[in-house]
Every structure is written in structure tokens, then in C-alpha cells.
Amino acid sequence: MTRLFALLSVLMFAVPGLALAQSASPAREQPFVSERIVVEARGRGPDVILIPGLASTGDVWARTAARLDDDHRVHIVSIRGFGTVPPGRNQDGALVAPVAAELRRYIAERRLERPAIIGHSMGGLVALKAAADAGRERRNPIGRVMVVDATPFFPALISPGATAGDVEPIAQIAYQALLLLGDAALRNQPTLIGRELGGAADSVFGSLGWQGGDRQVLAQGLYEVMTTDLRHRLPDITAPVTVVYGWSPDAANPRARLDAAFQTAYRSLRAPARFERIEGAEHMVMIDQPQRFLAAVGRFLG
Image 1 (cartoon, rainbow, N blue to C red):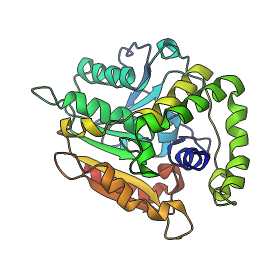
Image 2 (spheres, rainbow, N blue to C red; image 1 turned 30 degrees about the vertical axis):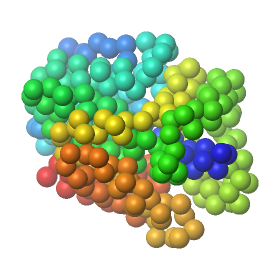
Image 3 (cartoon, one colour; image 1 turned 180 degrees about the vertical axis):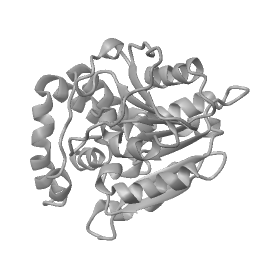
Image 4 (cartoon, rainbow, N blue to C red; image 1 turned 180 degrees about the horizontal axis):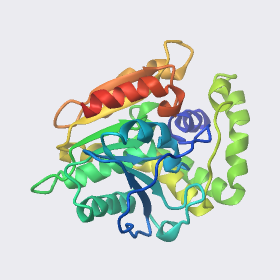
């Protein structure tokens, strides 16, 4: 079970390793008032929404946004409670579903025309939930979805037969550990995982940082990333889906064996997903291999 948690952590922790500066000034319009998310919009053209993952803010999308905002209207989301963003209502109760609902409210209030949504890690779960809910509407307001190193049920990447019930005890321990120990529990985790896997995870965790945030929101986010199972909702998604993930040709790297796992994870979509593996990237695909990732984004939007 420790090994399962360790490998899950590699795949789902959204933790920026670089200090990325945002560029350009937000457009002059009335701010979107939300107790769940904060959105910066800039540029002109077709709408693209960027959603970060667990413990990340919109800063992780700095390079992507800078490339896109010349010919797209880019909407950079930060989830309240991550980084230095005040937690608002995210301190109380569920996270993924309310954030997805708030994203759909943003799309409706801003009258976005079938935007493309790109979500990383937990942000990918939010994107899938929003797309599944929107797919039930008479006129689907979402144009297309890209999930970056995300899956409708993260544990299935490690153990295909796993259920949310199987992972629940581990998720509860992780939740309580984060509440009690805070960021220290995660800072110490690389050493513990390195011992458990005989050093196999050292190269991964040695390069990761942790942007942090409100302890309650982080704990809830980690719990939901481990237990949320959206596989039964995939048939509700009518928008095209692209799945981008980090990959390694090194047989000793767990990412060398992810191809079949990702394809199985999305097999119940109405239309087959498009898969793009980014060689040399780990979990933070857009930071680990920015040029390859931007090329994939170009194909997605094209």
C-alpha cells in the first residue's frame, strides 16, 4: 500500500519547480467574483481556459499563456486555497465538484464561445467533471478538453482493478497526515519513497517543489485526487478529449509503462481520446518539456 501511495504521488502532485512570472496585464473588465476560483483573462481570440493542479496556482501556466495570448483569449484559473490565494469557501467540504461548477458558471457569465479547457493533474479532474456535466446540456458549452497527466481515477494507473474503496484508507491517512504535519509531511516524503522504491523515485522527487497553501484545502484536494472516480461519467462527455502525459523510454522508470494504463482509463469515452506522450517529462509536463508541450497544445487547438 505504501508503494501504491508513493507512485500515485509521483503522478498527481502538481508542484511547480520554477518561479514563473506572469506576463501582460489583465483585460479591463469587471472581475469575476467567486469564493472558489480566481481567474485572470488576457489576450484576444478563441477562448482557452487553463486550470492548475493540486497546490499550484495559475503561475504554472506562465509559459503556455505567454505563447497563446497573442491569438487567443486566455483564462488562467487559480483555485482558492492553493499557494497564497485566500481559501474562501474551499475551506469547507468538497473541492473538485464545486470548482467544476464554478468553472461552468464562469463560462456562462462571460459568455465564452465553446472554450477549450486544459487541466493539469487535479485540474484535469475538474475539466473532466465540468465537461461531463456540460455534456448533459442541450447545447454543450465546452468545445474541447485537454487533460495533462491526469486520469478519471488516478489509482487505476497503478492498479487497474483498484476501487475508491480500496484507496479510501490510504487517502484518509494522507488527509490526516497533511492536516497534522502540513508541508513537512510532503517535504519528507521523497526520502521515505526513495527508501521504499530502492531509490527509483529519487530523480523525480529531487526536482520537485511544493507551492503549498491552506492546509485544509490541500488535505481535501489530496484526498479527492486519490478517491475521485469519474470513469462512469466519461460517456457523458461529448467534447473531444486529448490526453497528454509524461513518458520515459527508460524501462526502469514507472512512466515507461503508462501507455496502456492511460488508454484503458479513457476507453469509455463516446469518441476515442487522442493521446500524446511527452518524452522526458515527469508530472509537470508543461515545465519539464515546455517546447514539446507547447507543440502538443498547438495541435490540440489547431
